[in-house]
Amino acid sequence: MPLPIIQARIFTLMFSSLFLGVHLTTTTICLWSLLFRNPSRGQSIHHGFLAITLIMACIGSLDVSVDAVTNVRVWTSGNIKLFTDETQWMNLTKNIDISLQLLIGDAVLTYRCWIVYERKWLAIVPSITIWLGSLSVTILLMVRSVAFVGSSGINSPSLVPITAAQQALTVGLNTVTSSIILFKIWRVSRDIRAYVMGQDRLVYAMRVLAESGALYAMTAAICLFTILARSTAVYLTADCLVQITGICFNLIIIRFDRNLASKSQIETEFNSRVIPLSYLTPSNRGATNGPRSVQRMEIEVTQGTEVDGSSFTEETKSSVLKIQPLGV
Image (cartoon, rainbow, N blue to C red):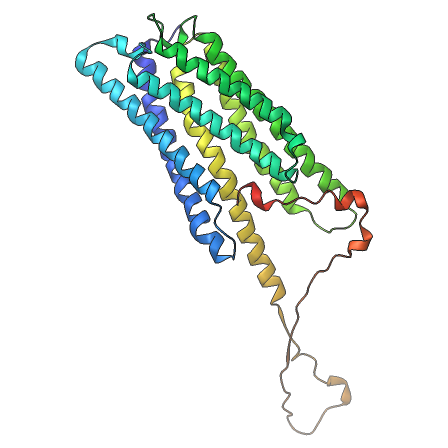
């Protein structure tokens, strides 16, 4: 049974508002990490990630606000065609919001891949190619939306191929780029396995990137399915995708920050251990006639770790991976 347009737009406003709440919550935590926690640990503020965090939050807020305005105008005027008229400024703005959020999310993922591969452009040639294709499709979608004629809205036969191509490129870029990043981290983890005890940080990085990438790709794939099915549920999935894109970006920063904080605490506790030696009394020297006071001593033990660079092969040295720029 197809979902009527009225119910679809009501559900869209409700669920997108819920996801916006999660988006803004993660944005607040992310800003705290970028502006306060990182400087307190001696790290500089990543102004690029700070700007992207704010831009994504603004786009998500604007999308829900425009959706609310559209619903109010429809219910006050009784003109249901406002939901499907793509030439209306509300629907044009929503198309721009969705497209811009996807472009930003894909660009950030490509940037992380570039950082992981030590700023080697050859590693991100596939990602850049797909991103440029997505940009071209976005421009074509805006042109077609302005000249739109019909009553089917975004499910119009003239727009479905474009929106489907846009979502397919997003799913493809996310899958390809995430796989390239995970392969690099896995290869570095394998190369240093014989020299480094404990690789929790690399494993954690793989898990964070895989989980966030899977959530993003799965949501985009669901949106693509609703587009191909020409269902009115596309309004719901597309608006939720706007918020989930920002949520995935924020979660990577937050989870890396929490991991660094817990690692720092563990290292601090480990390096400041104090071993009391009051139990080292000379009990085997025989008993004395009277009580004897024993002076209590404490020895503070610290441990440092130094890696012998001569033990690494040239291939391993070239595989050094910096996790820090991924999102912290």
